[in-house]
Length: 198
Image (tube, rainbow, N blue to C red):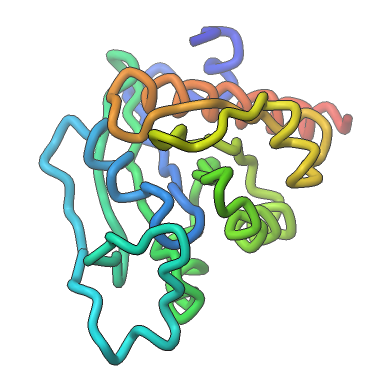
């Protein structure tokens, strides 16, 4: 991590930063939080029910049997004096009332995306853009999915220039850690630019 950028976010003492992990239903948010967390993650996964079938679209994730109904929580230490608290948001629209609470005090967000269902990312991107919360898009490279270059994904999502698009495997700790480092660096740059009035 670039220490000059991180200096804008920390003092001489230990700092814990709040990060959101958002995205569409079944994109891998719970998997990402679980794979990168150094503590046993808190998960509010519940089994999908017949009553939820009309509202929970399973297109592309037909084998999914559970869903997050409140949040996921994990923690990772990036440096001796810097830790990230990870809050995974629920993916379905019916749980969006929780997002405002989860977003309070967040340094930034990871919008996890699946290129097979890219449109499912728009709601999360709009949410963070309208609230001025820095975010990166992390493309979860599912087995069997067609590979796309980051610039192609950025164009398809109509992202603002400078919004990072990173490729990752939500099952791989090192891959997820690189995404989180990228987010912290992007958030530091965004806040520095705001301070300088750019």
